[in-house]
Image 1 (cartoon, rainbow, N blue to C red):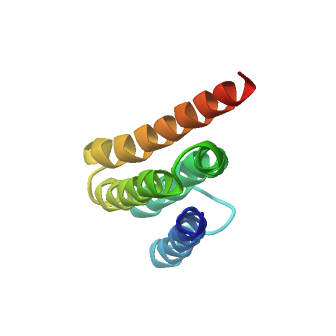
Image 2: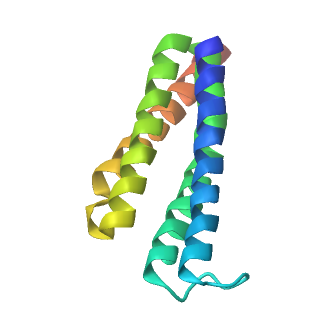
Length: 127
């Protein structure tokens, strides 16, 4: 279970890092708070941060639920796929948003896989 917990903490650190990068982009581009638009570079970083938050809300609970019913090592490996996906998403979205698909799909499908594992585990535990 420790590997799952490590992945969870790394996901939080990744999100916090994206938040710092968003703040730095705000400073660099001169977009004053509370505005969330005004410069393409800032808007791209902001979208990475917000999309990561949106994914994180689903990812963390299903990862812990899946780990309750399935191998924590397998669950942690799917969590690593999520982290890699988020990193690929960030790098590609900031550079060229139309190239973000691979990163998004890695994080999306790993989260969906964990959600399915969690649901199947819960249903099987009821039988």
